[in-house]
Length: 207
Image (cartoon, rainbow, N blue to C red; front, side, top):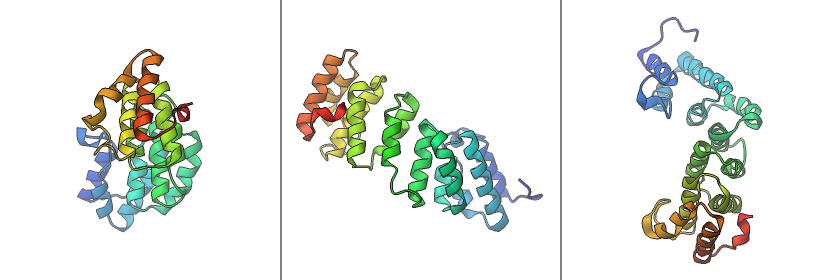
């Protein structure tokens, strides 16, 4: 940061980037970022682009909110190497900046990685998506994801995507999707087939 006398707002933004305070563990201060002007705005955006190299998954959504076109190529270069939550964040940002058609394929890939933290991030990202590739990834997760929480949430999401529940974690079909948390595959498959019958989906899509 080259500015000698940063404004109070810039100092506040920098503190959020450093993660100072519990409120900045999940995001940076986007509201303050958008209020910065001229040199300070450019320096702030430059800092966020630099954070891509250390896989700070809070940076891509901030860059997208700021409509930072200069972040497109750095994110595209970084995307093939990124995994998990960072990969989801960059895909969503690139889609928001209209640099890629959609983030669905990448979100589906992350769901299939089998990781807990990245799986949860991918499920949240998948909430507004309705593409077959997302549906198939959720179906796969219902049966094969190693984390029971992801399996259950994926099942709940299928009901939501089908328009049968008001939100992704509605209790309307909870007794069914909770069975996806079973240790044995036979029990999971029975529950999954019941889900498929209700939402109108062929069980074969789970692989």
